[in-house]
Length: 229
Ligand code: CDP
Image (cartoon, rainbow, N blue to C red; front, top):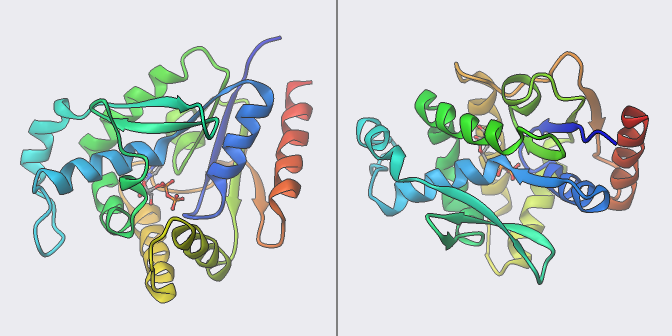
């Protein structure tokens, strides 16, 4: 049976990656977390001193250094999910911190960063059989994807989910800082000039504010089965 391309876009912390990963595992497709790729670029900037104390980015230097950023994914046998690697080093934990979250949207808005990541994403999905989540997958990366989903949930619910996730990882976040961060990222992601976050015209919308993880997993599997048939 022909393998299709599945694009899942939406606001920050709305549970896209959980549903995308679960679906990919269930149907034997490859899962790619495009946000992890922008987070890796951001971690690179932080480590190389390319983010100034006022939060601005040394864009000329970053553009010169883009060729030094190699992002890949490898399956973690313990979790059964792919981990992100930056130049061969597993950075799955480092890229999920609040510090990376606070710098990622300005980095992801840079046109040369988007061009480099989009090219890699298109290459990864060349054969189909992929579930990719992000902000611009159904609009810019795979505009011809057979199944497009746009996920959203209320700000407070999304912030609570992200807060719980950070606490579970041993961080001590401030709830209001988490809420502010996701609102600010949504604002930057939706208003940038290149490939802004928006719903593709042919996307199916899912508001999962009041859905459990098993419910949203089933919803997505049903949409996949409908589309494939
Ligand atoms: O996990 P969360 O939904 O909060 O964010 P993410 O998917 O890890 O993405 C982190 C950031 O990367 C977003 O806030 C966007 O600024 C950027 N991003 C993007 O610009 N385009 C994508 N396709 C995916 C992420």
